[in-house]
Each structure stands twice: as structure tokens, then as C-alpha cells.
Figure (tube, rainbow, N blue to C red):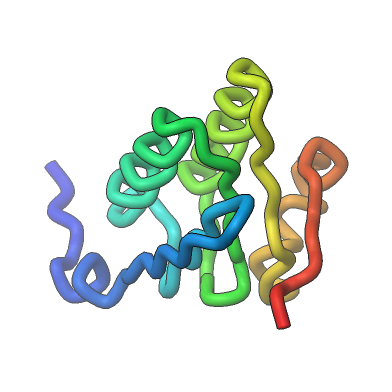
Length: 114
């Protein structure tokens, strides 16, 4: 059994900023198996309330396959509900994962708020 370091989980944060027509969700740190569950729960809760979610990737320093799964599932949920799920581009090393996997074209990207 693998035990994930508490320090890494403790350094992961999620900032949620409501706006007039959407909610901006900005995770900070590494999005991986150790940190994906709180972000999944946050996004799911917002989508359950019928809110449009914009996920800001700028604060991420790492994105693994569990993070990709979260993005794909959140997009699918939004489409099934007739809502929107958009991304704000992040650091090149994070967005490169979307490019390598061919998933970039499946997401709507929006400009970062001023």
C-alpha cells in the first residue's frame, strides 16, 4: 500500500470566486491522485447547483491522468446538464498534457479575468 505525503496534500488549495454568470475555480499546486478528490467534489457541488464552472489552470504546477479524468468528467457532466465548463490556460508544462493527449480540442478556453 502506498501512503501519499500529507505535506503535498496540505499544500494544495482551491480558490472559489463567484461571478455574475459563472463560478471561477482556481486550484493551486499539483493536481494528481493525492489532490484530485477535493477538486472533484467542489466542481460537482457547483454543477449540482446548476452553475457554470470556469476552471483556472494557472495555479497548477502539475497535472496527471487523474487530473485529466476530472477535466473530462466535469466537461461531460456540464454537457449532460446543458451547462458550460470552460478552462483558463495554465503553465506550458500543465497544458502540454492536454496537447499530448489530444484533449485540448475538447475543451472551451476562455480568457483570464482582468
